[in-house]
Length: 368
Image 1 (cartoon, rainbow, N blue to C red):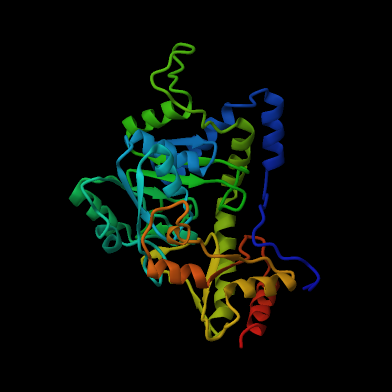
Image 2: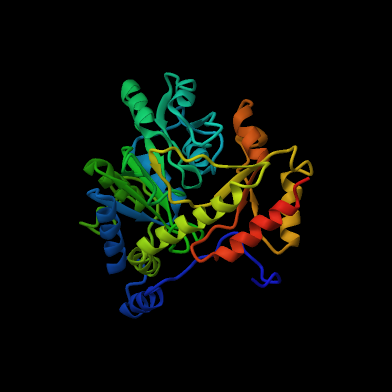
């Protein structure tokens, strides 16, 4: 490969009819809602084998729709992992609830039932496991814990669309699953999100919150004080085109993972995220832990060194305990250890095998 070529951490790929469908939506005059929104929701629901799917403006508003429909209110506690993208916590805070942060498994980096159980209190009203980097939480145990204490479980599947656990698609096991279609995600609409559920009442509530509490039976009659979380027809056109190529996207992401694995398995001082045998993972991001003995310069310096070699990488998620100015969170030793040592490598379906080889060989040169 050309070593002068810059390798980004992620980039959107358009595989088929994105341009045709966006132009069709533009020419239809359906700019906001419209046929592509309806089609995207129907096809997404069919893929997930659930009766209801609702688009939203982004993955965060998808979560907010779920929290609101479940009646989360000020004073409630929402249990979330301490190592993940913190939208799950931020939504709780904006509703007035309190996020309670659980430790995660040191190998999978996903929250477990045993981690969650330690955080339960009489104020716990919701459990939100996050399927981090495309890996899938051990949902059987988490769902059993939720049933035992009569606490609903919402899956944050922003990073794990198309991953499976015991054959079940991530996002289909909790009472609600939420998804993101941000530019780096499995499929993209630029910005966008989706919620799915088998519960008609919850679906109807989320639909109301999405669109100002309007039933659309009578103009300007509000059933509740809702929001505008709608996805545009133009964005949905992108989503429909991406869904048509989903099998290719899944196959190529798994190829990228296998290729990384073929090089990383032979590199000492590097540990890849562990995928359990009962998880069929479609990776959103390939992330690794750097052994501080092998990389004494530290993860952040390695990121800079990779950048100088024209390779973009990213750190792991920072933990809430590292940001006390925002989150009231006690120390989370496991989460903090992962956060300080994880580096996320370029991951996207059109990443070439020779580029992956170059990334791994470059990383190898920075070991001491």
